[in-house]
Image (cartoon, rainbow, N blue to C red; front, side, top):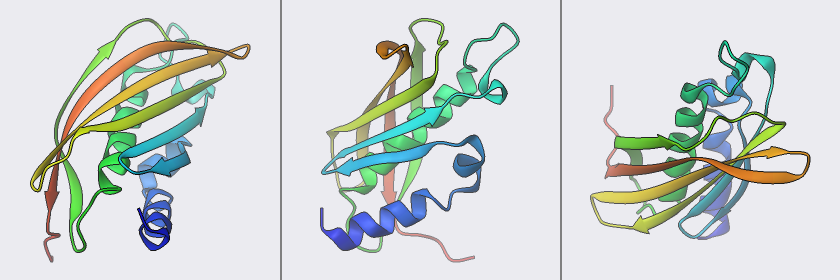
Length: 142
């Protein structure tokens, strides 16, 4: 991945209003890979004090999209076609770390896996796993 694409992806990542509002931060980008971090706040929790499934799903999806975007052809964008999340255990801690990697890149569709870890007292525990299919499309005007 060249530095111009990396800079553009960082700019786009930090411009997504919902992601910025949640507080998800880009940690690293590589060829077919992306890592994000979310310092947990009370607003990320559900009624029993665990991280809301919607927060995890959003983080997994957006990080997967960024991983897929590292392999984009010029003039294309990434859109999620579908994703499935497995919530493996209740998440409670200080922050979430999402690591996404492309499993299979294609011209039209790319399959990405996201793993979310919850960090508490310097220990990480896998809390969810997502498989996502991304469409690589030309942007539509209008």
